Image 1 (tube, helix red, strand yellow):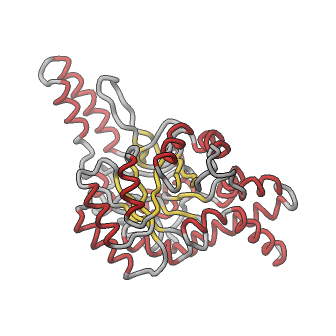
Image 2 (tube, one colour; image 1 turned 90 degrees about the vertical axis):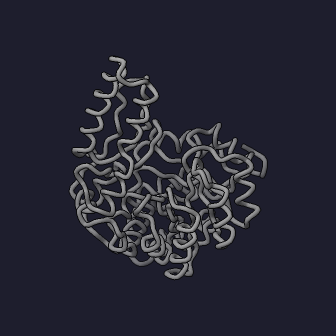
Length: 361
């Protein structure tokens, strides 16, 4: 590609994700997915320093731990970054106080729909509030309650997942919800996919799995090697054996722990049916199986019995790379895709850039 062609392609890319860049305050509209134990100060600061938008995963941290992690991240970057909080965390209000005290600019609420009160608390603390929306209806509700931006995440993503693919969610939600910036996540591992989301009307994208094997990621070498060796089909959703014992679907690389989880479900169901356990006791036993399993895999390197949460884009992770190189690669792919379009796509580009009048859903 000639220098002039690349410059034109980059200018088009910058126009396509201008809304996302302005909202995040970054050079690119690429958010880092918040991955527990992985998205800590080193990876988050590296993403932000490279021009993306790093997001700290609070997970089960205490308020004091979160405060220390935010301070540690600020020591490594002067660029914008956000904090992801779990809606069901028992100390959510105190965690929100920590974000306010630490002058966090963006707070992302995951793990359920935040209440209007939670969104107001975020905004009153001076931060922009972001929430996840699995449907157009829920997205509209989040906007009415005060969300400043949304993330839509397809079933291709790693960790806890919904049932609908990224491409279907994008087609359902993006054309009908333009009041706030919407970031697309789930299965995005190349620049061409970023362009496709932007041309449908996304303000930007969220990427998690591609960053797990970043040089700056503290994930255990054995954990990274599992990602590098895996194909897309290895990232499987957890299976629920009996509807009486619901299992929240989680996408992870299949390993011995996955098989043991299936065996446990069968054993617990048999005990309940035999009267040896109550249904509630059985549910508790199933829920506790994966307790601490993600940390064992990410930090300790137990890739046999630990939880290897990964999205289906894991097949695109082929080596360990610095974050700078990952983002540069994604941008180069996006530019090449746009250059190949030539003058095509102008109408799509205009639609992606222009939100409707305020109040139109």
